Length: 532
Image (cartoon, rainbow, N blue to C red; front, side, top):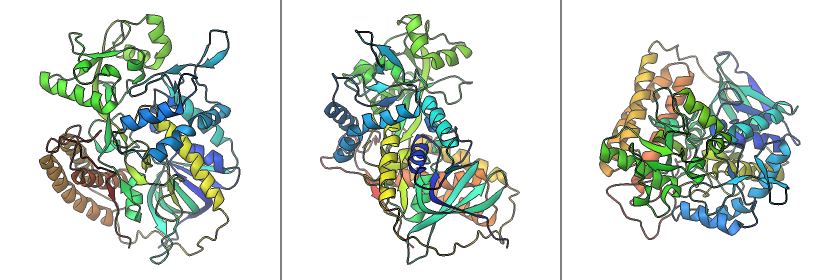
């Protein structure tokens, strides 16, 4: 058995989106950092975020209002301390992004002075969304990537899959690194690190229809679960109400900012319907809007609903939503003249690896930031444009905590090499493909926008059968990208259904036909695997 290649660093950041790159840049002035990216450094959910980032910049707005809106959207189970911490640190975090070069849109005030153009989205009572046209995520991602690639203390490992966290030993549960799979060299390697931060994003690829890129397979949550981290609120999967419905559209998102600027949802004949479901109409929170669209589609037997902004001036639409305009025009849809066909799709994981205000998990030396984490900010439903905000705020909190504990002793124990002596190359990749499609389809059918006990039980029976088959496959064959993702996705599915079965009510993003009402006293759904 050949020795496994071992890399060393002070901080291993698994993930290269807004959270991971913000942390890397904050820490690079103090130590040696490795950033692990499953694809190239620019591929991830951050890049596809359109709307913007919430922060109080307007004198007519207030931090208290941002807090109240977030708590309201979270349907009663946000952690108010976390919400306050995030809102209070929002402007400072955005100013840091601006100092790094993120080009948020500006306009002139009544005196001709420049100010940031702020838009409004569902759940917000004020205009507080900083944005770069309708491609804010791409602007953030490219700016941070440019900063990171120029820093001598940051080493970027592209096309690497993280496999599992490594603990010192059974008596010492501290994390000392991770096994990773080099996709270019098709070999497993070790990265030894004093601190490990998970910034792997969400897990929406567990569903048949998703707005997320292919890399969103819940790797960090699954790794953390296997290592013994606490997981919370996995039942709260946000389905974005408006993804473009077209056979050639892929997973293109239609930003909520359109509704913030006056677009309205309607039937094929142009009849609006959101007023029937919520007094806030088209600016209701995403869970309400997604369920309304799902209800109307099922009621009418329709393939999609429509989002209409054509009543706005053409110049306004093209200026504010250039990417959406271009994408739709490429598919024969002129949004200045006709409505956009839309359907809901799995979009954001409100649950994840449980952390404190320092982004620290219950496993020593392991942190989690961004969508992979459950901080308590989002509760039962994430308010629009709080996601990229959370990434930056908690990247800074994580950096501060690591630096405060940087000089503490750390383990020097030997890491066992990766053992491939008893596995062979797979000659049955078709099994992975079949299991992959089966998993994502029944999760969509049974654990989607509307659930029931019977549907959840059906899903869990299939998950248990698939998990047994996948674990056996993993034990007998060499790793591959598809195998690693499938192993993680079946774990994610099990965590989602477990949390959903625990919640005997309907709240926020979790709607169960058997428990349509709210409980008086409810909190997060917390699960933990016994430590070995």
